[in-house]
Image (cartoon, rainbow, N blue to C red; front, side):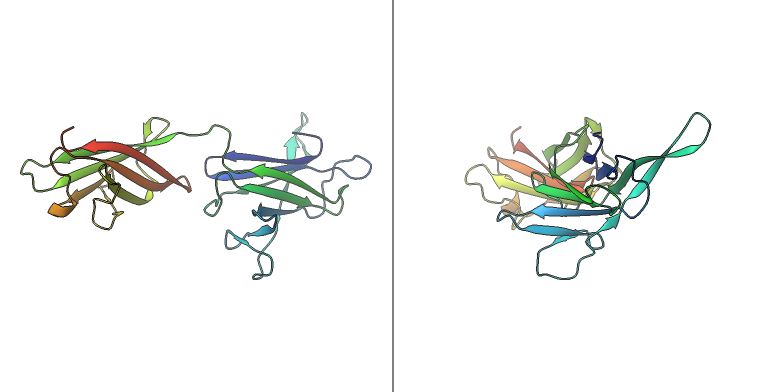
Length: 239
């Protein structure tokens, strides 16, 4: 971390904001109120401010957003067993529902005891330390009586099966012939298999089933670790 400035670290499901503040004489700023604001940079250059109550971004001229949060000054323990001031202030944001991967944001920190009083840092959301890899196993079978198509979905994070924390699951199947949706209007909502973390969907309507000799692309989505994940796999009646 630099002697002054704002550092932003993204890990799974949260953003850590950290700043080191100095006054005009170069001394640590350990008192006063340190305010944190976050702006989303729009394509036309305008700035939408983050609302810390609704966890959404508000455009200029719209509403009365809760546009700031108070950062916490951090201390450290020294060799005598005393806690001493560091001049480092932090805040953690753990609700990232309305944040967009690849979007550019600006963090602004203000404390009237600091010099300068305000400082900014631009950052891009979506590239973070220890980035995780998500994928899904999509298994397609036809039951013995040939009366229904059976889809079974299991999500993985870094190669380990995910058994909890999966919400808003969907399944679509695109026909290889023309890219249209096979499962009626689609997408459909799979059902969790007990508390296993795996999901299933059974299709019994003849018009929505995979015909012999045909294939398609099964696409699954789900919200995992506060972000939307998706995965696709080619499936076939003859595979």
